[in-house]
Length: 260
Image 1 (cartoon, rainbow, N blue to C red):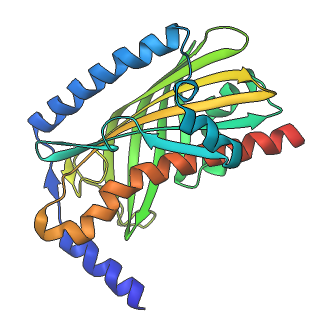
Image 2 (tube, one colour; image 1 turned 120 degrees about the horizontal axis):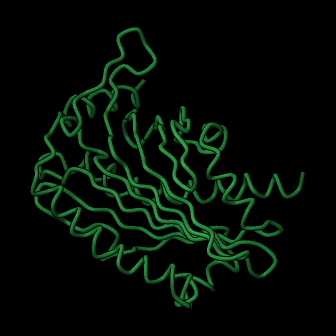
């Protein structure tokens, strides 16, 4: 009862906020800078971020997933917002690159694999490109349901290498999800827990399996001083946790398939 009461108070106190043009511009500039690095990595000899970091290689010897900041400490403050930039990697033994790509392209079954996905489907396929709908449930202090649209692209570099890019095109918060009174808030006029989400994946077959690496760049509201105790855990911790859960779920699904 106490936890439910706290969540109810938190939901009421957070309130709504508005996504400003200056916030979007700051996010777009950050993405443009990061994409130059990401594209150079995908096309060059240093394909994996993890290969260049001893701490990452060491961590993967004992942990199934390693996640670290992609920029700064993982959160970059911008006018009226926060950019979250995290990189994570896992190694999945006994699988091939094509198996990993097939799983990630199977959006109709993502709800069976990823804990945050309530519903999902490919709306349109055109060669290597896919237009995707995902309904997400984010839980941290309170629960937020989001309808999200993405443009995704998958490219195979060689028999051992591939990459993928997913860019959000629309994100809306859903109130009273799953009820007769369900409704979407206007894009950018909500509680501000997720306004943008881009994901950049790299897959490399090596060492008896596939290294799966992902950089997730997202945009949320900032943390008002008066609401820091409520908002901060959600907007600062959730992006890292979401990436870790996504990579772990990917690894588990592929491992089950490899052992089937």
